Image (tube, rainbow, N blue to C red; front, side, top):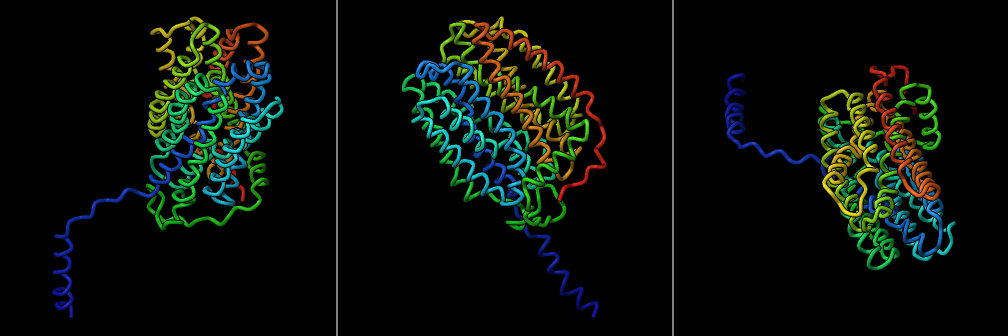
Length: 439
């Protein structure tokens, strides 16, 4: 009997050994990451617009820069405050449904601005609707996709998805600035609405909620992971996670540093750099092109930061990023001029590399400290990022109206970045063991 088995199985084994190995297929997780990248690019189109519209809206309607800054402030605040609830809603209804609805809301809000005649309508469309829509596709969306689909290369994937926002800025900012200068601001708003709608079919047809939906393991995992049941009570869970996390000092350090990150990027440079450069005689298209260059180097800087985060201590990375950003802001008032010169280009390149390089190490620390709830916790940390951005977007406009320049804002932001570097260094080094996942 044994001889028979040996004789019948050995030829099959020899034949199998002779067969050429099939080339490894690209894991489905990378396709999901690609769709997520494109989706975030579509959402970034609107976020390219605010800095370009401050002067046109001021001229068309006579609204103060403080009033326009208030609309930007509402948008930025809601972008952050919506994120943790959106992460919980994705656990309840699925990523695809939440993102498709969010893109539609963005298109509605940006499209309706074409017919506005009063400041409250700006606050409603630009602030409320678009803030809710972009908040539902904030970086908590990227964190959710990364946590579900990837076990390995999480830092790198986080960096790539974070860079999508900069890529959207790179793609749309020069186009939108040209449209605003040549054809008025209204066609630019319509362009943003159409860009958001164009992404919806890609999301609905190609995005999937969980690896189990297509019968694969998460990338880098040795075991198949069952799809968890829908998590009911999204709002309650989001608030419960906040209540639990807020009892730790680590949460407040992460939230504080990320608030300063938002203040010195979205709130300051993205909103006020173009009008500040215009104050010094630089054409709007030239200033907008410099912001686009920031977007180019932001892609490289954020992906590199993700690679570094997989290999180096994230706390030290954050300290270095914030310290260098603060130093660069102190030099900015001396660099603004009617023309673009080499020192300004150096600032732009450096600031681009450092723009959201803080995201991968911050996500890594949230994952290390808060485990299964890390996406929701990061949503709340992101909320602090946007609150910081909102405050500076508003206060920067008020400072410009009051003092006639932005100099004080640059110096104050530089000092805040120095404080953030110190805060990053004192974040605790071991995970919070007493922080259970919230059901």
